[in-house]
Length: 103
Image (cartoon, rainbow, N blue to C red; front, side, top):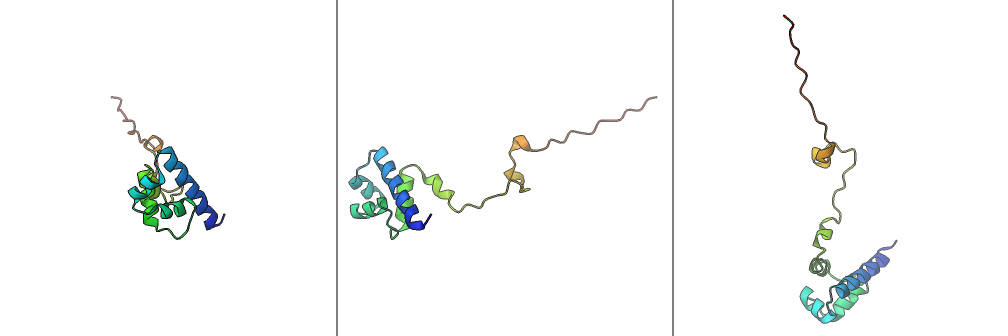
C-alpha cells in the first residue's frame, strides 16, 4: 500500500476517534494547536501536516502509547534476552538431590 493511501486511512481514523470523543473540529483543532483548515487536511490525509500535530492529536485521544510502538525495535522469538522471556516460561533449576551415606 502506498504512503498517500496510508495517510488517508490514518486521517479517516483520526476523524472517527474525534467524533467518538464528541469533539467538534473547532474544539479539537484548538486543543492540538492548529487551525480548523489544518485539522481538516489532517483528517483528509494531507502529507504536509507536521508530525508534532499528529502526536498531539493522538495523545489527546488517549492513544499516546501507540506512538511509542512506531519503529520500536522488534525482538525475535528466539532472542536470548532474559527480559524477552515471560517469567512463566523461564526454566526453573531445582537443587541437586543430596546423596546420603549409608553407615
